[in-house]
Length: 168
Image 1 (cartoon, rainbow, N blue to C red):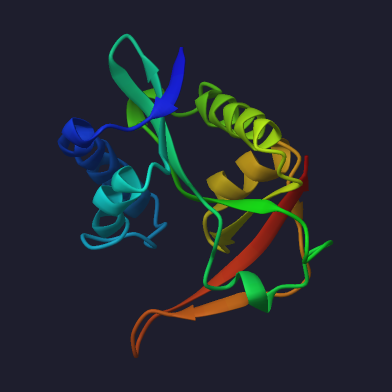
Image 2 (tube, helix red, strand yellow):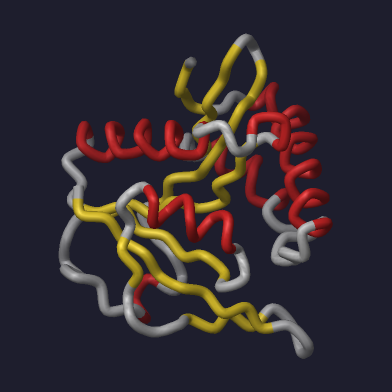
């Protein structure tokens, strides 16, 4: 198993993997991603060296972005607002590998990167209806903060997101 930064030439493969993830989420009535998001972010994520992949036998098994900023970050009451932290975003597990522990393995690799960079916290936001992701984060030691962040997508859609953090 290899954990590494994504490369520009992998953009098409990453896009295909996430299209399958979105279709699977939609089938399971977790309709939070669409044709626009998260796809619009991947090229910039790669260029800024923040999109990480978990790979096995040349297959992309899982991916996530690590960002040092999140739009909603300042709106939450973190345990330590001045601490050095990184946000996990756009975490996805290839549908062919779901339910086999690869999400947890991805998180363990992220924890190691955070430690090497002397970060104190991992943080993330997760939409309230995304129960598989919530279970993954809680199983891996993330703690839910009080309150809900509401992200207005358009006139008809507002996502309710929980904030989670883990002290490293």
